[in-house]
Length: 242
Image (cartoon, rainbow, N blue to C red):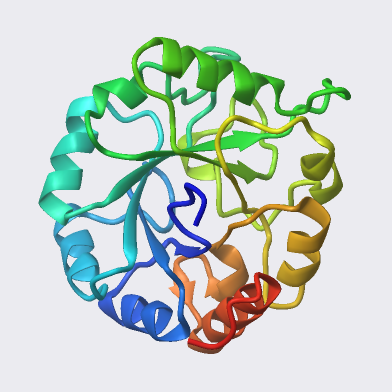
């Protein structure tokens, strides 16, 4: 997969039933949320039961924002996570922002890191400049992320629970026009079965991630929406049926 950890990810699973539906749909990655304030946040014991229902061969990604490396490693070991997604801000923009610093990649040892990034409204030539800077600093600190996930923009002081899964979209055209990052890109933010093919075509991203677009309420996955989204995403990538 040219360095990609996944092609189609469904994030914010909250039950073993969710895991079984997502696996049956044909996604190759699931996201388990450990972000304070998120309606999809899981206690470790619940997360363990969800992870246990995920079949072998499907990537189990833990989503964190503002957590310490010790806490992330502890939860990853307890739940059996395969990779970590850092969803906090790239750099501090005030006293209230939840930041995941570049050195966190190296501090997590051998766990692959997916870094959530956002387009900069004030950077016309390179809307991913801050992401590029963060990745460079992470590499200088000993280890860079293996993928970047472009999510919808949020205020610099957004609380942890409002950093993702909001249903807002990233600007697909600006993603496509941005100079390439040194790691593969996945696209997130308001993706649904109805728009994922257009999003892939417009952004050029080789991977996608959905949460709110396959729900009837925050944290409540709809099996029909999950099945439709994964089928549409796989079709957009020419992967065919599972």
